[in-house]
Length: 119
Image 1 (cartoon, rainbow, N blue to C red):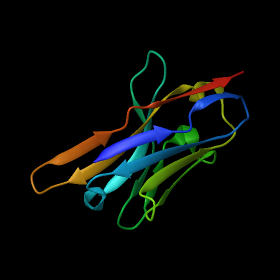
Image 2 (image 1 turned 90 degrees about the horizontal axis):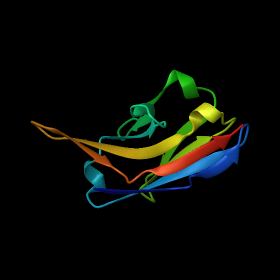
Image 3 (image 1 turned 45 degrees about the horizontal axis):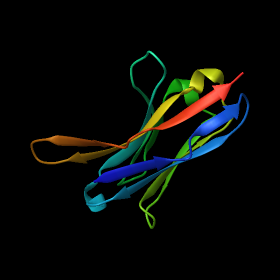
């Protein structure tokens, strides 16, 4: 599975951005996908996840009500609509895909896209 993010950039506080994650390869084997972010000097943290079977969605408390995760299976693409952005949302955002096999769980990551929110 290969993942490529796009859509990052510089935006003022209160603005919006939409990130995209295009998946290729064995996409039929993906059980769930998600967005993670790594703020400067901090550890990577979960932003939102969505399952492949029933589209169950989970958000981090910090983004609830502002961010929306979605996916288009016809395009093998996942999105993250980010509204009401805050300076603390500044981070490198990573796309993640999970494949659960019988004995192992595989995690795939994109290269990351920078989101910078100015105050």
